[in-house]
Image (tube, rainbow, N blue to C red; front, side):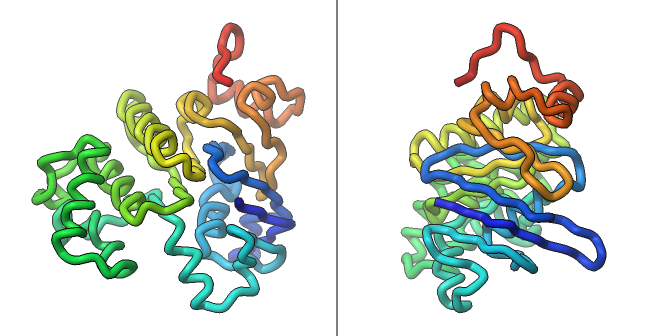
Length: 250
């Protein structure tokens, strides 16, 4: 369970989050949408414990991230897998080494156990046989899948994906989102996804949160968000060309 209460984050004079509150139930697949610069990525980093709020409270599995010790924070973070917006792959490491990297830092598994788990993770995202390639030999979609496999390698209870489809063509974007949905279906864990592919995100999410100027102005099931009468919500979904009539995803 994740709870954010009146969270404020500012970078210099620029407010990234401005009194944001959010509740995420265990096992939910929450899609986060909103215009550029509204605070979506900052929200992901707050949930992951990578950014400390200036004000407000952040609870992850009943641990208050603003008041816990560094050791307690590290324990919580071991249970959170993050797929970063820019992939953050190590260019000098092979695909297998990139995926297994968190295991070398966070577990005491043997080399053979780490390799076995990494090979399995790569197969899950459709990259069996890519173990010895370097990242510069991968397409954009393949790099995202490596990053997804790495985010899941420690079998975290929470998976946070920040723009896993950015810059990808529509078909590849939907493939990535379907893989994320499949991982959530298999693990039953909590998944939070930020994506500019609004239509694709609505197709896999159990709930949608719309961030606007550092606040969440709408958070509900996909059907209820689509039916919202709030002007900002209707305008954003209209700009995203989200289909309404005849669509029932819930």
